[in-house]
Image (cartoon, rainbow, N blue to C red; front, side):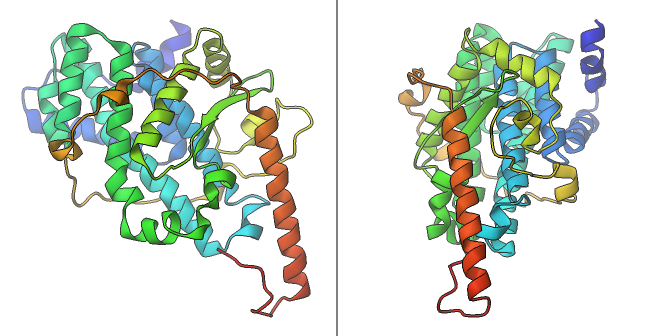
Length: 345
């Protein structure tokens, strides 16, 4: 019980609602409390998984959230400020932040309603509409309650989250024009938008990547592949051990300290890199109303022959360091010359 004592303090007991509006307000308060920043989201996802290990998506979300934090603080490290303009770095941070905030704002109420359903021993999913959760997910949670198909629930949550951010983030006018629709999208290869790493205490980095990040189906495929890797019997204990031992701070030093002979990215902890960010969701549309659910979104993804990405990732890091040094060199030669100045995205 000591191991999980903090987990059980994580979610307060809310009596079965007699006044629905007040109960919904209390649940929303919990969502807001844990959706403060990348650190609080990551911890909330992981702690929920420890409380409900049958909800495997929550552990996947926590590990992907760790990656988002590392990507955010990369923008404040030694490399990217020399490669990208300050404005571009801020815009990229907001792209990560907005996407991850949006997913949590939608997914965590689902997790909470499941949690309280288990306490009350009856389904609470009819309240999904009060939290603006898609009709698709209401059906999937009802199905899970009856069938206990853990894999299908993970896949459904992946489908939901990727469609959820497609309009507000990927296709949002600002992000589409300034990030996803520009030559800046060399980030597909260099800024790790499409790559997710699962560290281990032995120093190996496992993971997967996909090209075509803007395509929702590609992101669904990546999510399903990451799920297969994260819960593969040969690797799951490695990732869970890392997650339980290493507190998420946002800096890549969280896992670099276990790796030998790797370049130090020298990224700051997230709390020091960024202050509080305020979001709002003025208009929320149920994406599933006019979308056909494709059967191939539920296909099991087979792992590639080699899932260890340690050498590949740190090779990318060294490439980026060389790019940053080269750019600083040319800026030093022509500090005020626009014609010969290397491009800043």
